[in-house]
Image (cartoon, rainbow, N blue to C red; front, side, top):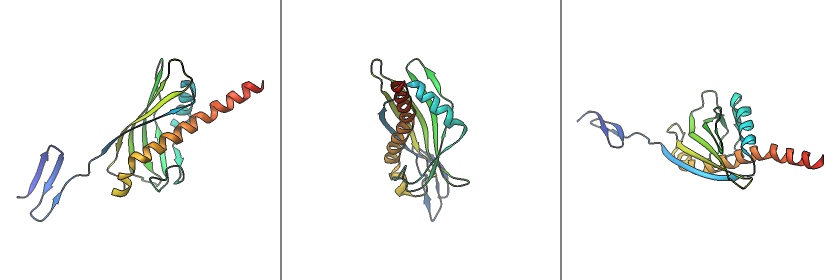
Amino acid sequence: MDGTYLGSSGVFRVDSMQVDFPLTAAHISVETSASADLDDVCRWLIECQANPVRLDVRDLPALGQGTRLRLALPITAPRAVLSSLTLFEDVDAGGCLLAGHLRFVAHPTEPAIRLSFSGRAETGMASSAIRRQAAHAARELLDVIAASIERPSALRRLASAAS
């Protein structure tokens, strides 16, 4: 029986000789901590918003390819910052690899922040091997982001200690 059907797992097509099931997007949720404050986070997000951040294979070895990171302008609250994140393949018309949102939450008494990513691995990821590495790549991405945010605050602390 030929046709297109809507099932609980999405739309699929049944042909007399072939069954195509859609690739589903895997939900990913990872978190880490960073030694920074929310001012550092906002400054970093605003700087990165205008220009996509290029990451090479050394930054995200789980993906095994270069990527471009796009971030939206931050939404702020008294102890939190939220921004959307999209990670693309680093080619002219690169497909989307990861999409979701970043959440930065300040501890009420500690100087560290909690950084989390919640999103999905996109079906545009080139191979199933890369899709299986998406959660690991998201963890690596958070580590890269945390290190990028921590660098300026560490430099400011050193400068203020010297003066």
